[in-house]
Length: 481
Ligand code: NAD
Image (cartoon, rainbow, N blue to C red; front, side):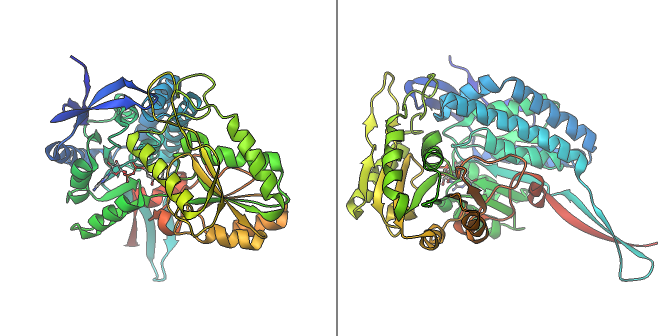
């Protein structure tokens, strides 16, 4: 009988009512493992365990929490190749990308280990004589986490690490498509010495386990990353619950990369191809709109297509693969649907878009580049979440900036230019939460805030020291001495 990877509830391994098969998208004959599917009862037990653990955990010393997070970081980093391989096997990003993501998770835990020791308050003189005012931060309580499939270890990591660092208890429901990395991460943290019940993992369906987490009255806050449509439901449920839950949403993007006439062509092409197609374009920060000014447009398209012809699309675990498979059949169907929509709307397919066969059965697709796209087309307005980008022609910088900002999203935006004036103006006037100059829109540091504006994000930023805005609550105390 195959081993079933179980949920973690109150420090115990608990089987779900069902199990689901975690399939390798590079080779659908390869089953990564069988993972328990939790029930509403499992979720309720997990929240009860977190509630029971909270009084003691929230009063641990910063040093105790530091030791656990640091130990978890050390193990993640020591096992980064094995964890990266598991991640690539279940999600389909290439092995170097998988190892990079596992490394990032380890670094995040080291950063938040340090944050345990840095949490400070303020002493402020009162406007009243003899009175002192102290402003301190306390843990929020029980945090529910719901995560997407495209960063199976980094996103659970950048939510769990700050939650624990600031003294909260956690119930996490990872994406049902890729539970393996989250399972391995939670296992590491638990063995790093965490008291039972502080961190609980319940795998399973969003509509069952996720929904029950949103509705549970003992959960104080929800940190969600995923699509806009699910994010809306999450926010609505958090507001409808009594008491209302604190909520943080990180959602989709339609990120622009502006390429100006004065750009270094080679750098611009590298930046665009990396931002649009690496990780199979399945990144919320992917550059899916390439806004290119007239004077460089044709040279850029020609060089980009040449560069794309050299991209090797193959098994994520194979050496030499640049682009792994799409994550599953339904995502591949969505990508193909958008190719058809773009063609119908009049965009021209300059390269790619074919479904590919490889040695092993998987969801392989040649990255696709459209030209003659306008910003009004659906391909320019809706998130595809695959290896698909379109080039939109602009007359000049001013028009390119206007197009870049003409979107419901606002996660990341980039510009390739050698003009300090335009780079400076773009950084100031881009309506995105993260702005890159001569760098891909995807690819960020782990110690600084991450998040967007408009339809891409809602609530306080994630990552870096800014994470404390969500994972702590402020208390103002007055004392008459
Ligand atoms: P999704 O919205 O389909 O699912 C996200 C999570 O929500 C999953 O765990 C899912 O099981 C759960 N869920 C689904 N329905 C639910 C419900 N009714 N109640 C509670 N939970 C529910 O997203 P996905 O397909 O897993 O991920 C892709 C999306 O995530 C893209 O839109 C991408 O841009 C976004 N994303 C954003 C960021 C960011 O930081 N901004 C990072 C990565 C991915």
